[in-house]
Length: 153
Image (cartoon, rainbow, N blue to C red; front, side):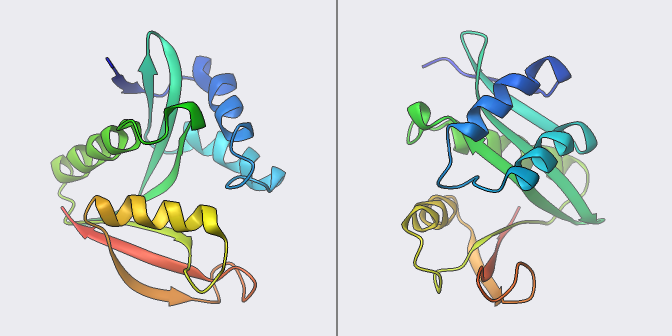
């Protein structure tokens, strides 16, 4: 499968919105979904294209000079487990390294929450070399405990 990773442009907004809407088990809060769409313009972002069709998107946020965060990542469910997410993360790892980054991190739902879909998310990140750093009940509240996963890049 031939995939191109290209910088996000506003012409991709609807396709990224469609991807979010295709993932209600991960993206079920309309206000948060709208914020993710806005952040595609506010932070460095990329899309994965297959035959000029957007199949994934990612946003990178720099928190400190040597620390970068995967702020948002979504891949259309028809393309899960096909290497799209890995390609998007490889893109931001390279960009982060070029900008002096040493660490890449991501927040996701903690394993202390029983949601099975986020179990798949954590396994995906673990498979790419991310490790748990800490869990917090204060980031998203006690009902949605967060885990911070990190990777040295």
